[in-house]
Length: 221
Image (cartoon, rainbow, N blue to C red; front, side, top):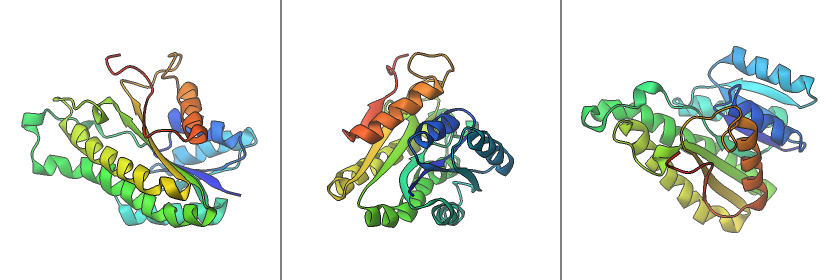
């Protein structure tokens, strides 16, 4: 059995993606800092017949994140799908002229070091399988920098570049790398940004394996 690893799993998008992939037979590994929240989501998924377990880790600690993903693969099977979608901290979103070097440490750890650590951990398993999908989920500032959200704008740009490089390099190995940009807030009941709708979008990206950047909604919405 192979698994889907959802880094930054929470009760909204993470749980919806877990259900969507779980219905297709994937075992689900949930990664986030809060063990209690992970256990609750895993229990809810288990009640629906989905194999799921939580693996606590802080994405700003690369060794901790890699170790969690290693435990996940041992427990649930090789990671075939990696989704990296933690929600950035609010203090990453400072105006550009009020952003100094130290203010960028957190965003870079969150959106560059974390993704690199996660990918490096799961990539050997994907290569052994001969297939895989890596999904980066970002806010709108990944595509259009926002002057009031300098930290995430800068870090998301770096994450986007990393993802695109992976997309180009790994396509020939059967490993698809893609990015979903979600402008604005994820909103229950929204036609395009409801968690279940976004989960279906991510499933479609995984299945169709076409292109790098995808948009959940119009950027000016």
